[in-house]
Length: 212
Image 1: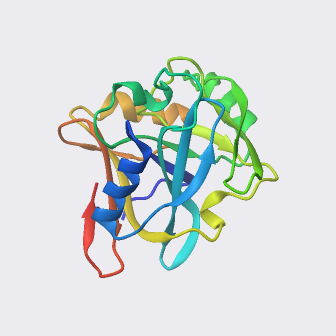
Image 2: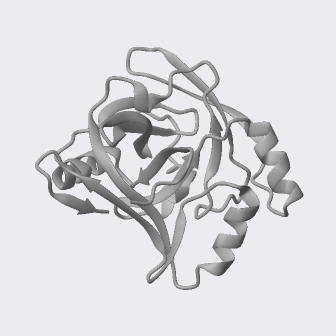
């Protein structure tokens, strides 16, 4: 079982959020809970991840264009504007000190980007706020860093859950990405294989193992 240390959440994006939620439910038997809308023109739905019977703090974020957005353009967040089907696009880790993690990574030769404030409103109107690295042109094969501050981490809330068995990155040549993750100090295991992409292994309530 390979699960990244300090894993916060895994991002599965698609061109239509309702379709992504249905796709995930068909594969796993779990219907994601509505999350809320972001100022970036996206909206999400969430599923908590359990490890060895313990809930969170890891979770899966299903994300797509916000149907209620006013701008007609498709959001570019996580490459949504280029997707035609659901895809595991990115993941986040929560270091103990996000500012120190950024400084240390830069000293070792990798710049994860500046730390920005972001927020979303839950369906009940509650505003959630957090800090994360999201520099322009940020690599999606490298985790972004997140700090929830005083906000409850969504994986610990009362949302539906599924068991996480493993999460890793597949690369035809693992060495370059492994070097970047070493500089960052965080990240998933990188295994050799093709095509390049993320591999998420979950166990359904009926015991069936699903690989996304």
